[in-house]
Length: 260
Image 1 (cartoon, helix red, strand yellow):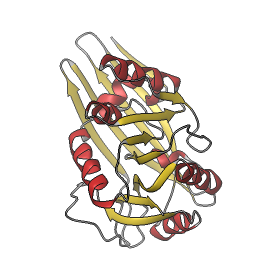
Image 2 (spheres, one colour; image 1 turned 60 degrees about the vertical axis):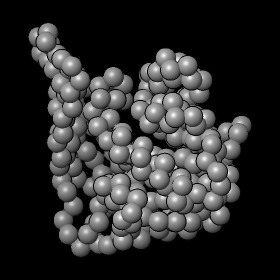
Image 3 (tube, helix red, strand yellow; image 1 turned 90 degrees about the vertical axis):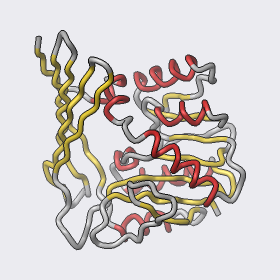
Image 4 (cartoon, one colour; image 1 turned 120 degrees about the horizontal axis):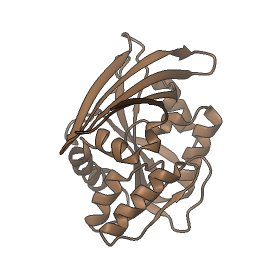
């Protein structure tokens, strides 16, 4: 049986978790190395904004950190809390807007690894988010933020495809750029997710909008929140021994922001 639905991949947390979970081990090692190398405080409490299914939160929590997060999607939050409970960890993820939140306890480190930050469609929302993070972060704390920059010295990548498998569940995905609204700085993206099991095939047809950032635009945004500084930059190879110098050809960047 084959069906097609127009929907958000975020409403299918099981599929989302598998599709975007392939780099968990590398991300986990990289985050712990970042904490050791760049944090100006001892990292015990970790927070993830727009945490989705919490694939990294779970792993960090099981390693002894005090973890928490937020997300706008109730299905993702429920999925994450159920898994936290499965591993006898507190159900510490809540439904909240990453651009408008407060925490009862400040954190020592935080992360957002795969472009969720770019869902914030305006400069005001993006600045509000960084201010929320800064206000909730201990001095010397980190915010490890992974985004795709728009290159200025070469053509931008226009499409990508990737696959994931777990047992009899296979997921193929294809994402492509539909174009950029230059006035609003919004890139329109199409995303097809093909899900295969032994008894069915389903295609999820999704549409996303991401705010665009060139190097100078992101640097300017960070400077508008004076409590934060860019401590270092890396690429998506997650090699702590090889910081990356951002140039006009750079697309995949991990910015390590630190609370002054």
